[in-house]
Length: 197
Image 1 (cartoon, rainbow, N blue to C red):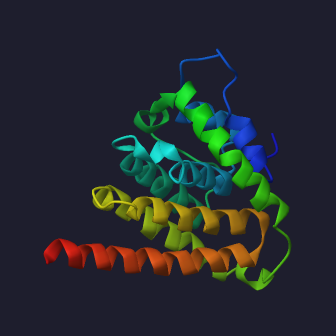
Image 2 (image 1 turned 135 degrees about the vertical axis):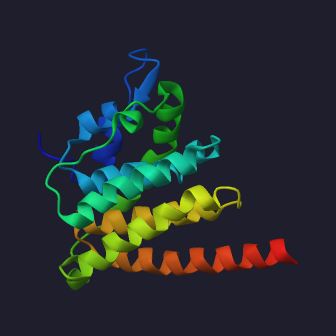
Image 3 (image 1 turned 90 degrees about the vertical axis):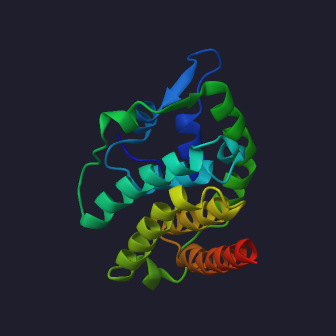
């Protein structure tokens, strides 16, 4: 099975059919996208955390663990993705997932239309290592930062941009991802200062 090549294709692949099932598990998503699809798997988890699904308690923590596991294997150069059973069994209701996908589809169409070969040096080794490592570091912080409002969503947006740029080989989206990382870090420091004061 060939991996999805656009964000729209990813969302279409995981969008549950009406009335088909009560819940969609991580294993279901992996089955639709493919065990070699590291960038699409990172992208689908992070982009869902930008959607209203991020409001579900615990979702950013679970998403952070999932993205860290996926991106670590991607960074290590594994050819097939492996996830533990406890993660594969995690599920979200089909209705909630379908609503989130419906919310994301117009954005996905815009991103897909505005992607092309630009700043391609950012999408080539060794700079791809930097992007993957950054994804791991950002996602690993989400379980700790979930209590801070908006922080995990901004971090998820940064990861989404980095994964999307790597998937479609568009360096402009990688640059946007790096810029969002800077914004996310500034937000964390500002919120931490507010909490201390």
